[in-house]
Length: 370
Ligand SMILES: NC(=O)c1ccc[n+]([C@@H]2O[C@H](COP(=O)([O-])OP(=O)(O)OC[C@H]3O[C@@H](n4cnc5c(N)ncnc54)[C@H](O)[C@@H]3O)[C@@H](O)[C@H]2O)c1
View 1 (tube, rainbow, N blue to C red):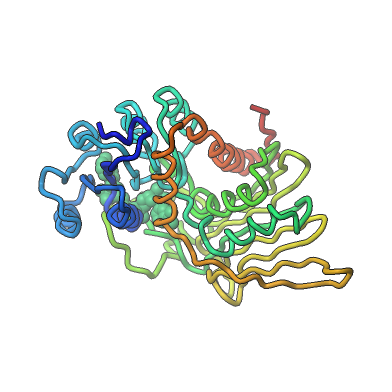
View 2: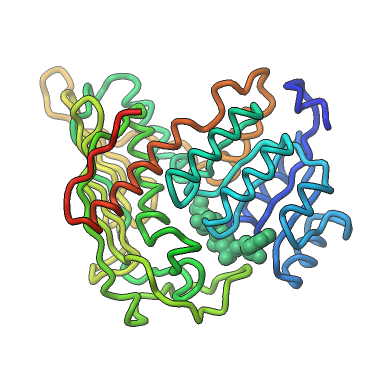
């Protein structure tokens, strides 16, 4: 075990599970970190394994097929999990039990039960558990958080957030569209990024109730697939389409605020949209815009000396996965991990699960206070 595991500065030994787009982001970020050695990778596909092994200078001893072999043999301090969602919990539990700090891809897990088991294991073994919410590291989100923390919006009482695609079902018929592996469709996949952004911006309120609906108008008919070529080990695409392709949810948050959240992989819209709109007692904010898809863009609406004002703050650079990994490593290097067991992440799982239940039961689902 390296010195850093005891909370002292030292080099960290990192391993990554998963050779797809997500796994590669983590590998790159570890490889670039001055205090980390990327020592092992694991994944099922032989071609990408040797290609990535060569890219990162790993001998065969650092290349694994299964995650358990890697955890048992590689002497890791930290692990990143970039597998199909249903594997996040099994990999995390195995790693935490072995005393390894965990950075999971989003979402934490496909159910509250499994997400809670991950948090409980992080607590029991006192290790860091974090999730890769890279979109919260966008420059516009970073700036908006500062604007909110400075009090420019006052009390935020209503929020709208959405990520809607014209034709963007990732891997039609692969694990992404199979319920047992993905847990859900766009709400679980991209809606959770928007949910994370809003909860982060609003100071981590909890949820009291959710009313939601889901639809599957494109996927089951083989329409709406993403045109982008997917690298990494996907299934052969022969699986069923078992998840929604559009979801809409109304969430009652603690303190009386509400959130309208929409997520879609495919729908008849002019162009893709990613947005957050916040309504506050002293000001409002619009992040994103249908005209500038996915480019950082922030407008703050307020009053200056009694005049209505529209501000477009200068934005810092986007953070991406590199910022996520840097922050995770900093948490691991900190002297205490007591507050880093991922408890606040459970709000996301709770809201997503309640939304699916609400959609299934056609009624509002009340969330029990923790
Ligand atoms: N944060 C983001 O922006 C972002 C973007 C894309 C995907 N993701 C998330 O990343 C994760 C992976 O997505 P992807 O698109 O890279 O998937 P992918 O299908 O391209 O890759 C999945 C990888 O997991 C590996 N794997 C599966 N079972 C395994 C096992 N038992 N042991 C070892 N490896 C195993 C596969 O071999 C493959 O290499 C998902 O949770 C997804 O939600 C996040």
